[in-house]
Length: 119
Ligand SMILES: Cc1ncc(COP(=O)(O)O)c(C=O)c1O
Image (tube, rainbow, N blue to C red):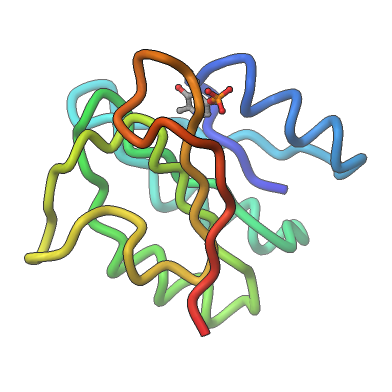
């Protein structure tokens, strides 16, 4: 499982709970978007899934990430816990993702944990 090297404790424990080997990738310190080369390296190293988080309401543009994932047969899980209603390419983060998580914490906009999947 590919996870951002910057993130919250919950991301690491989810990987641990899934008993999946965790491969970390860096995020850009300015945009907080994944370093695409490092993210793709986790896919090459065998990550069956990668988690991409939209930190602090800064939505990540997933076009290149989804293309890379399709090439490697990797599932992209969007963590929208901090997505805060932003948009990128006229869509809300996570809305068309194959898998998307939201959060239940009192400070989160979704107010209810869920893992949602698109048909
Ligand atoms: C990016 C991110 N993902 C996941 C979580 C987990 O959220 P919860 O434990 O509220 O479901 C949090 C909580 O702070 C978060 O910030």
